[in-house]
Length: 322
Ligand code: SF4
Image (cartoon, rainbow, N blue to C red; front, side, top):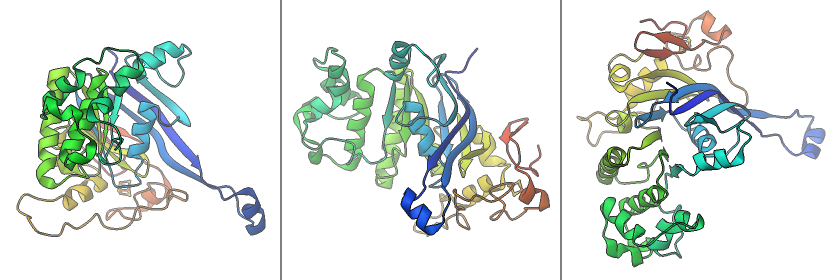
């Protein structure tokens, strides 16, 4: 059986060259930034796949390519059996795209401040000529707000409530897949758990499939069915949460886990992963993680490790073993 979402060889390269005249005067060549490189993963229907990585790892770029906000340079994205990159029948592609929604990080920026909540929520349905009678009120109650909130403006709500409005808007067009890009990172810690719980409940209630994008491994531990770890645009490890948290195979995953806040660490400053992400315009040779890797050897500096299937997951590291 085909996966609900299938991503194959997905690559996105940005031209970040200086303007032509500057290049001529300064004797520079064109410059390219590979934000995403040859990424493969699958998402089963009604499950949550989490993409985790530091800022600059390419996770948001993948999310944007999935929802059609960015085109790919190479590779394919197949959703519900339709290849969104190569399908010639535009109506097939737009039918699938209409069932994909995105929730963004910043609930302040993603709501039009001049619109009432009712109009914000129903806008995607109204744009398609659908029936919006009572829709906003119904959805507001489903996301834990009041039907009477439909007449208010976004500034009358807290951050957590605004993210609930964003979720209600995403649900309005009856999506099957929701791409959630750091949905809780702009919220207070106390509100994050509430929003994540709500997302979990709605997933079961509406039969949703999630692609959850985050830099925070602790967010996905209890919510994801599978986790993919990204480093400098490449998938370096993939496993279910139990395996990934108990026996991480890739040194980068181990580093992320070491930096994750622990339950007994209240008030303690959390050390970030050591070292800097390298310049993606001029990435290191071989394994891109080798300048930060505590166990790197000569082969790591020379050859890029291919993704390998292990008994309980996949890993791209020369030295990782089952
Ligand atoms: Fe470290 Fe080498 Fe594995 Fe890369 S391939 S993560 S440098 S051990």
